[in-house]
Amino acid sequence: MTMKAQFDHFNCEDCPIRHRAVCARCDAQELEQLEAIKYYRNFEAGQTIIWSGDQMGFVGSVVSGIATLTQTMEDGRTQMVGLLLPSDFVGRPGRDAAAYDVQATTDVVMCCFRRKPFESLMSTTPHIAHRLLQMTLDELDAAREWMLVLGRKTAREKIASLLSIIARRDASISQKGLSGPIMFDLPLTREAMADYLGLTLETVSRQISALKRDEVIKLTGKRHVTIPDMGRLMEEAGDDSDGGYLN
Amino acid sequence: MTMKAQFDHFNCEDCPIRHRAVCARCDAQELEQLEAIKYYRNFEAGQTIIWSGDQMGFVGSVVSGIATLTQTMEDGRTQMVGLLLPSDFVGRPGRDAAAYDVQATTDVVMCCFRRKPFESLMSTTPHIAHRLLQMTLDELDAAREWMLVLGRKTAREKIASLLSIIARRDASISQKGLSGPIMFDLPLTREAMADYLGLTLETVSRQISALKRDEVIKLTGKRHVTIPDMGRLMEEAGDDSDGGYLN
DNA sequence: CAGGTACCTTGACCGAGATCAAGTGGAAAC
DNA sequence: GTTTCCACTTGATCTCGGTCAAGGTACCTG
Image (cartoon, rainbow over the protein chains, first blue to last red):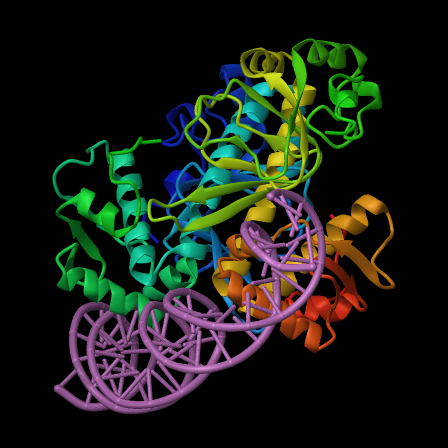
């Protein structure tokens, strides 16, 4: 309920995702054109932002909060296919109907662009199309890394992989680096983690307990995680722990 | 050994993937610029086209044959993360080192573009960038469908899903439609199917035998498949069998 | 404070798919 | 023709993670 009004409108110049979102490369004049077709929408934790199959009147960016992309089979089995963080893009230009459910896992603010005007803007300003291509290629890489997790990793490795992804993302946002202990809050319930990793929530819970018992992680409450040794966690994830590159 | 010379060079105008590849939208003048930086390369079945980590001097399109994108863990577990068919794009503009292994599963002809010139061409001709965005978005959708298969489907459903993907692709290339029996040759070994689906080759073999026993498919030899009833197969895959849309 | 609810943990048991092992079939090689 | 090899099949057994079930904990609300 609090502080929502501040998002009813603000300038692109002051936008917290200005330098990472689909508009990152736009110049002042292009931003102006975007401003003309944009509007903000707020969603509460748990709310469904888009239902699969819905007509898409808009595309847009996550400004703050975390949302999930999920696919559901007729019998109810669900698989998360995307985790949307601030600056991530929602929707597909040129597509009428949504292909996935989009749900807010925390309170979410979205910067929406009316779809048709956005599409024509895209065809005239290469900066937007080019940035969107770059972001889509990154997402494709992430999806492929995730496929290895889903197809070939054990439950323990899956949990360790998820934790290391979240840890790296947090480190990259907060600019803290990966040496020394890392702390963060899990933005997902056990069930959402299970849907992410192709597991059941019971298995997620058991493996988190096991990693805690083995001192790979520390837990404060149920959501606050401390990682004393990032290298150790990455070994558990089955990843090359040779430092690696920070995106 | 036979008939390779014909691919040493031919005109883009006569190219079998002219209307589907990254160059699909290019006009005559743009094609000319592409011609100047392109060359053909032939690979034999089983050959590795690109090793993960290699410097990428080129990007390109599969002209004919089938290749796979795979990721491998240190202990040897491998997961296929992409199946490359004629017209599919290989490589990522702007990236120096290959992220995945690319292997030819049949004899493959590639149309390669030297990377640096291709990148600068891309920034001047929106037709290429736009087509690449479209293809990347399609690949991302395919990857997400695949994530549902890997994370939530049973072994039997996985096999049925793979067969239905191949069947639909063949139908779309040969323009035969999906009513009536469908026939095709499996382009993958049991092991490659296992790597695709996150299974072992033994499980793949058993499930194929089971689908044959239950008359969902017919086998002639080990590779030639006949699908008497596509709706039945899609039920087995756990997909909505409501006809669906053909891409 | 009691009661409810949402989220999480833990235990007991079970089964789908992995693992280990042996055998088959067909095509190329000698 | 037989040897070899590779892709594949099938069987026996094991195990990881799923299923079912019973609490536990923190935070609401009345």
